[in-house]
Image 1 (cartoon, rainbow, N blue to C red):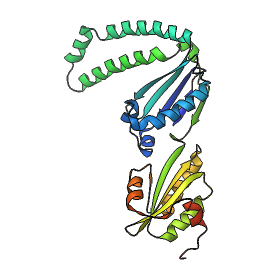
Image 2: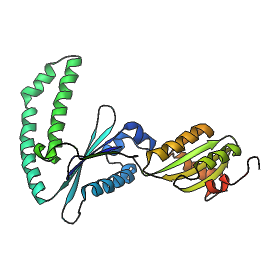
Image 3: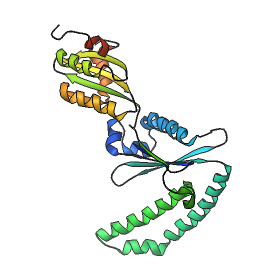
Image 4: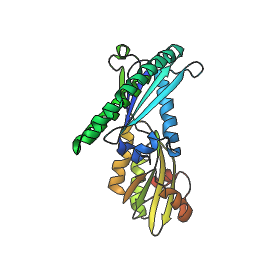
Length: 257
């Protein structure tokens, strides 16, 4: 997730579709505000609030969510006080007039008159123009934008659940010895149909720690999944071998012991 602080009132967030899939979401679920996207949006609200020094007592935080052509999601977050609200109201009136102008029947007829590929291009251009106009309602005046103040890259979620499958207990022990120093909050070991499954919750905003866990998984685990619904099924149907602090216990075990 790329977070760009445009100025003291505006933050732009860009999240790739692949990153959303890794945390069990889709671009549509975020844009449409589905229930499963609530934890992600709550974390994003906290992050944006800190970036903008947001005061909920006398300010509001507005968010505009858009799905891009490549499947990524772009979110604009704008902090607004009373003066900003008045300016936004003025922009809304101006935008409404612009939208009405763009959607006049003669403009629609021009789109309908096109054929083949050109019809789609013309329609997309019309819709994009309307979307850009709507987005400007929440953005501050262009003169106040300037160059971005800060750009950072962070995982889409600071907490994610990983589940690794192992053919043997020895492979699982080796895996745990490598990752034992990572900021893992909880872990458990299960056995199901002859295979071992290790579930763990990683809490970090450091991409290097996420990469280290995944790299180790590729080396020792038969598979490694993130935020998978299968973990709930495993907890219900599998045999729990180590209920708590599994990684610490396994890292201290002897192989083939």
